[in-house]
Length: 183
Image (cartoon, rainbow, N blue to C red; front, top):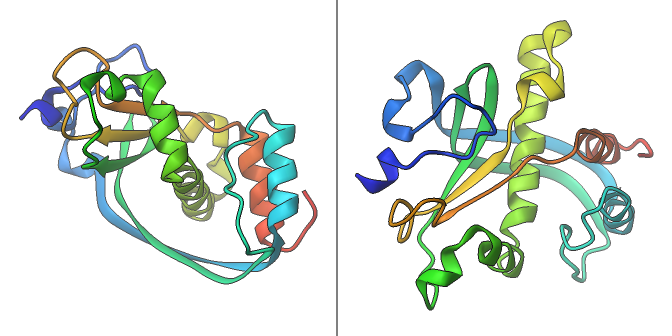
């Protein structure tokens, strides 16, 4: 019940809660798949750094992404014309202070959840661009991604909620990289 009633950080002046969303505003477990054509992880990291996100792309042994990116987003919802990724997390963090929005950034990066939120945002961008065609504009239609940590959400204002609106040039640049063009 707490999670259904907690105000979501959508960036809108109009309050939004999960319990207040109509069924037509929600897409549960939105599946996605898109092709990646030899995307360089180094290029993706440089792109993220250029847009103020040096910790967004995790380090690792993989130097190129190639093939199908497949996944399912827990929830995509529409609020005031903007679409938001929402992912539920059940992580047990050591203290309630670890669930504050500023402290959650460390947990998000430690588990690569910000990278996941970024990929989900990219998937929603691609989906909306395909569905809305000429009417689509990232700045108009894509809102912040939201991660709801269910163990703490609603215990105090803002507790258990993380959100970030990824910069349009970062998302569009990654889209081009994944499609095989230079960013």
